[in-house]
Length: 99
Length: 489
Image 1 (cartoon, chains in turn brown, green):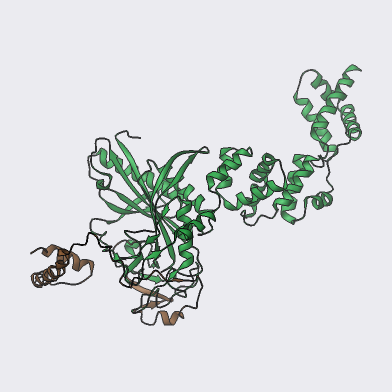
Image 2 (cartoon, each protein chain N blue to C red):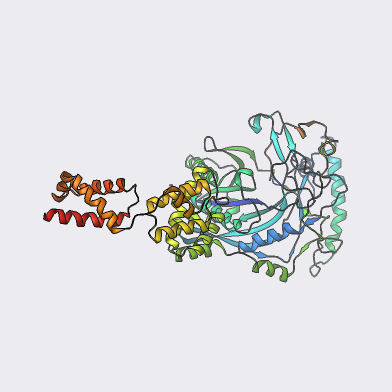
């Protein structure tokens, strides 16, 4: 088996998925089989093939820099569980952020 | 400073581009609006929406890259950077990972008008900004929760990453100053660190002289989001001292992110980076690659304004000192004022003196900037002409300038309204001088006995009687002549 239980726990943590300890072994086994299946692609010789960045094969469509009306604030906050002062209330953050 | 290690500093600078609309949607990108009034399904991260790239943001980014002497790649792509944080509604940021817009540029470090070093710009990429968190509580650590404003989410950013080429806090300051100078002439960003339109993260590590590993393996501390160039310098200074003390005690430096407290000048631990940096980048499936033709890149290159180094040279050729040139180049509006004033008046040295002393003083006193000076360059030139033709002494001109600044009137109008005009008539000055000499025989005797200061008193009397309008060098010459005649009698 290529995948370790530690790796599975790590990936679960990154994805904020709760994984019970009695599930780990089974998930590791399942995930490993998925990876094994995909790994078949490695058998192909792709040395002379350009990497595929995008399946559409288009160049980037661009948009003129023009402002169009935004949503009304009430609509923007409509699905928010804890709207306060026209903002999205969120629970206390334990960790630092990114930019 | 301890000679047992080198200070290694690399800077990551985020610059908000001042486009009208956001990077991937048509919401306004302007700063300071009511919370969440600039949002739409795209920047709120609703399911099923698609980003469409803003062409102006690309143009601005290319401009910045070329001005920083980077190679702009005709082919670049966007990637998803995944992390969970409440200011990021999609739970990923659209950024550029392994194929950024531009690479390998340089920013000169300028000391006394000379390039002493070039810092390599490793890469420049485009990405979207995150929203803004307002913490309920004094500090993040004891906040009860946060309120999220997503107006900023999706505003276009460029991230400018330097190589770890800087060796002191001072070099970091000079890098940032010149980086901001270069960008300021492109008109692509407000570049206001206090408003967050320019943000800097500093990576600081100490490399002991006996260290043999690679720079990447050195434990590195990242100081996040400092709000002024001065504070970046202070933060680095503190961090260098802190790490040096740890090394001296034989302790390990932990790789981590630290914040900067500008009240006490210290950095403080925010979180350990051991696991945090697993962003699982992958190509953004909603955006095809960005393809730029060589022709389009060259068109932008041709439209670039002169670099600050070129402006410095022009200033120094005009007789401006290196220190003065740094002040002028460091403020684009001031540079433009200087350039215009010198087209109206050819003594550039004189123009520089008046701009940097009296006009600067007036601007500061009134809380104005060079964007809104109340005396135009042409009006300043007119005033200087009145000095040159003898109508005003330098001292009188200062008073006239003060009045001009208040009233917005021209130099000629102000001179007329104030009733000031320099007395250059020899006979008129001589008459006053003779009177002063006759009235002060003891002082004249003191002067003749070698008391040089006595002359100053007599000059003062003449100036007082002429309400300060007599031409000072004429007063001096005539006074000496009259005293000489007096001595003979």
